[in-house]
Length: 87
Image 1 (spheres, rainbow, N blue to C red):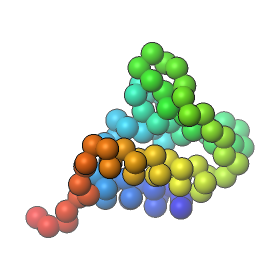
Image 2 (spheres, one colour):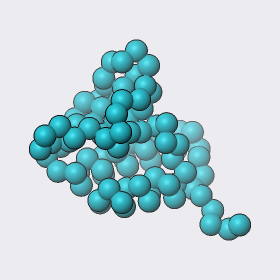
Image 3 (cartoon, rainbow, N blue to C red):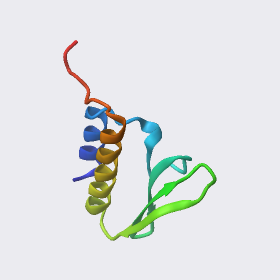
Image 4 (cartoon, one colour):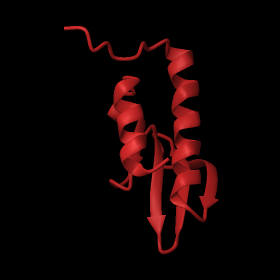
């Protein structure tokens, strides 16, 4: 999956933007993907600034897949329905 695919999937599945950051800086209570030289770091940043579930990926595709897996899990917990294209 590339970045455009991930953004489309997140949008289509109604994932709140406050749940994640795609190299947009740090947000509390969010999953963060951060490009650090030639690797991508993933972590959950809690409200106190502590990092949890820290993982390092050598390629973007694996990092994007991992973030989507985390968001899909959260969607199930909060029972958020996908967007409907019906207007």
